Image (cartoon, rainbow, N blue to C red):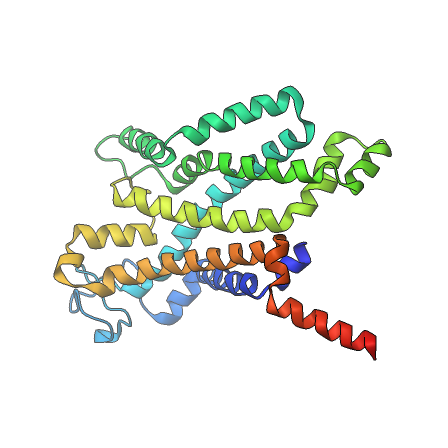
Amino acid sequence: MFTGFLRNRRVQTGLVIFAICAIVAIFGDFILAVYGFQPLEVDYGNTAVPPGVGGHLLGTTVSGQDVLAQLIAGARGSLAVGTLSALLAISVGAVLGVSAGFLGGVFDTIVNAITNVFLTMPSFALTLIAAGYISAAGGPGSAGMGWVLMAFLIGIFEWPGMARYMRAQTLTLRSRDFAMATRLLGESRWRLIFSEIMPHMLGIISARFLAAIMAGIMAEAGLNFLGVSTGGVISWGTMITNAQNQGALTLGWWWWFLPPGLAIALIGTATAFVNFGLDEVTNPKLRTGNNAVVRRFVKKQIAAAH
């Protein structure tokens, strides 16, 4: 399944977009050194100028800071929060969901009850309240709550959906022939879970992980927009927030708020491609309707006839 998942065109397109964003985030300092502007560098002679003026490819903010430099630096902040929150959500959700679905009994009942409680909670509202209290605990002079703590708060409310999904998939796998045969050989339950069940769901876990990254980026942007700071870390969310606070939307400075918005939308598009590809791989109806699969089948039939 995982091999077919990676061969899917939509999945490949989504992964390429994610890879480009990851490269920008990782090598952002080198890219900025080549570009020649830093995200906090002020060009006093060019404030709030449109793209192309003064060598600024995407213009400047009202403070004279280069928008493209902030966009490159913001990729690291946004992806860092999204990735860390996704790792937490996927790890907790996958382990609890697969374990509950395979073991069953009292453990499944307890995990299912806890999952249902978390699913009924307004996750973003609770994240906002908790983040607001933690951010305010530092006092009026506090720089913010820090991106690590924000990622933890986002991730701790994202795992229930993953746990429910993984539990449902595990219930369909635990009665398969390979699982029954491994159990008859005397293997332990935990070895069955991590050596047999988990590898069969790598494609699903990968797709859910990318979706969780997107959810983390959106949550971070929303929290920053509502006034919860990440402690001076530049991200796409802080760029949109600063643009809104400085009146860029009303003054028509589109080059300030549009690029980070498009960057977030691009990540969302990549997530959608990966999820569509996962549906084609896991859903037999969609798989048989895939033109590439049909063409490969016809070629094999022709070769067999010859």
